[in-house]
Length: 431
Image 1 (cartoon, rainbow, N blue to C red):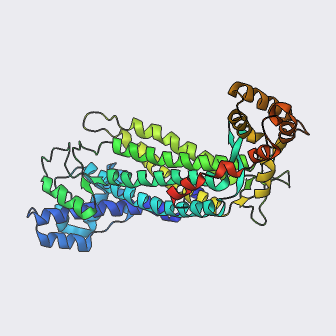
Image 2: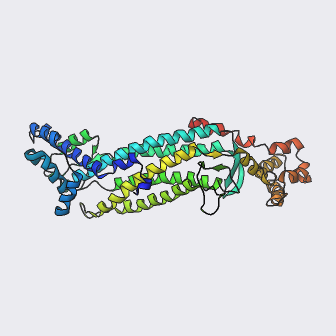
Image 3: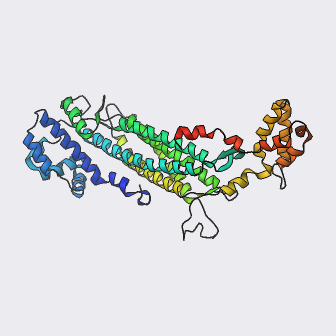
C-alpha cells in the first residue's frame, strides 16, 4: 500500500523485517518442539536461540542468486548460527514456515483492527447518546418518509459495527492456524507432535488437514470479513456525503482552519474524507475476488496464490486500518445541524406526517382507500410547491374536519408520536 494510506502501527506488521522475524519465530518454535521430543539436542536449540539473526539486505542478495526466498533466509540465518544451524528446518517445507508465519501476521493485524474498532464503537455510542432526541426526517428512496432522530440513525451504525466486531473475533480464531506437516502435509518427515507443540508455543492451532499449504478458504474468509467491515464504513461515509449536500446540510465533515475545498471555488466545503473512504471500500471489495480465486490451487499446492497474497493481504489490512481510524475521527468531530434537520422535516407543511393523518381518519370510520385518496391529494397538492402547506390543506379539507377536531389534527403532526418506542432500541444497545 502507498505511504499516503499506511499508518505506522499496521505498516510495521507488513514490513519485510517483521515478516522475517515471524519466520525465525516459527523456525525456533519448531526447534524447541523437536528438542522437547528428543529429536535434536537441547544445547543446539539454546545456541540457535542465542545466535539466530538475519539481515534483510543480505537475504535479498542471496535470493537474487538462489531465486528462493526461504532458502535465502535460511542461508543467512545459518551464517549467524554456524554448525547448530543444521538442526533448523529439519523435516519442514517452505510453506510450513510461510503459512504459519503468515497466520501470526494476520492475527497481529486483527488484534490491531479490533483495538481500533473499539474506538469507533465508543465514538458512535457517544454521538448516539448526544443526539438521542435530535429529531430529523427519515428517508427512503432518497425521499422524505417519516420522523426519526439522528441518534436512532447512529444506533443502526453502532449495531452494525458491533456485528462486525463479533465476526472479526470469530475470524481471529479461524485464521490463527499453523501447519508443520511437511512437503504435502503427510508428516512423512516430521512428527505431528512437533506441529502441536510448536503451534501451542506460537499461540496457534494446528490445521486440521493441510496439504503443502493451509487451505486458502481461510484467507478468503479473512479478506471477505474485512471487506464487509469496509462496506459498513462505506455506508456511513455515503450517509455523511448525502446529508452534507448543500440542499440538505444536516451534518458536515469538520472543516479545519486553513483547509480549502476547491482550487477554483472558495466557498466549497467538500466531504472529501467520506469520499476517500468510499473509494477505499471499492479496492478492498476487489481484493475479495482475488482471494476467492486463490482457493482453487493445483493438487496439493501450486504457487499461484503467493504473488496475489503479497499484494492483497498487506493492502487489505493497511487500508481497513486507515479506514477505521478515518471514520472514527469523522464521527468524533462530525458537525450536526439540528435547525437544518427541523427545517427539512417541515418542508411543504409537514407532508411526512401523512400516515398519522391516514390512520386517524381510518380510526374514525373512513375506509382506508378513501382516507388514502384524501390524504394523498392534499400531500401532492403541497408537494414541490413554493407555498405548499400540507398541514393547512388538511386542516381545511371538509372530508377531514368532519371527522377530526383541530386538536386531533394537530396531534397528527407531533413528531414525538414517531419516537415513542425508540427507547426499546437504545436500551438494546446500552445507549
